[in-house]
Image (tube, rainbow, N blue to C red; front, side, top):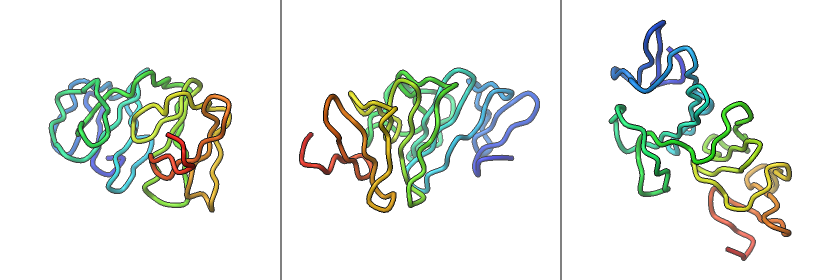
Length: 147
């Protein structure tokens, strides 16, 4: 057993008592758990996000739209080898990055430069360069007056 509601054996990966038929048990790992917010999983060369709202483990959606999609979804453009979570000051920090993108709750923060990521405001907010200007995010909401 690993990652709270996930488990695996030599031949299968599980979500609670359901087999994840799409998961490779030898390459499946829980990257981060966010109480109430969701979590990220690595499945070989894919990054999968999971958000509460469904226990259907048989499908992986290609839509990670916050507030709309629930369950398992493929993180767009996720680069599994370089993917890493960004831990803030609280246990629901939804951020992650890889060599190409910065993510919040499984969605790409459009135009964000992953090499400029920094935590600010006592690690409660994320600052990143978007285009030519810095942008500050509290959870997934941009809070510096620009959108």
